[in-house]
Image 1 (spheres, rainbow, N blue to C red):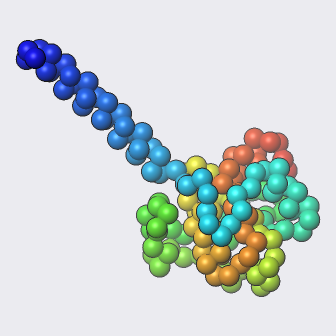
Image 2 (cartoon, helix red, strand yellow; image 1 turned 120 degrees about the horizontal axis):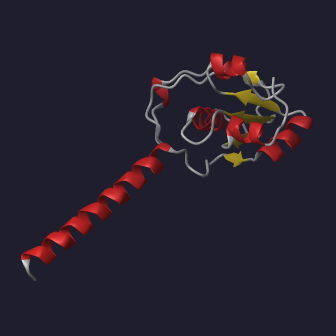
Length: 153
C-alpha cells in the first residue's frame, strides 16, 4: 500500500468514526424509548385517559406551564441537576411527589417537552419507584399534544 492510499483510508476511517460519535452524542441526550414500571402513551391515549379521570402532570418548570399546558394538567415541576441519563442520581434533583394523588393506584400521566427534556422521564421513574402502579409516561409531551391540536390553556 502506498502512502497516498494509506492517508485516504485513514481519513475515511476518522471521518466515519467522527460521524458515529456525533450520532451517539445526539442519541445520548434523548430520553430512552421505554421506561420500566410505566406505560408509554401517545397524545391520543392521554386524551382518552384524561377523559376517564386520570391526573395529568406537567413536569416542566413553572414559567413553561404558565405559558401553555395541556388543559386540566397540574404543575409539579421537576427540578433537575442530575445527568440526563437513565441512571440519573435522583438525590441531586427535587420533585414534590407529595403533590401526586394520594391513591397510588390512580392513573397519572406525566409529560414535559419531549425528546431531550428528561423531566417527565425522571418524574415517572421516581413515581414508579415510590409505588405508583399506573404511571403513563407521555414521552412525546407537550409538542405532540400541540401538534394534534388538542386543548391547551
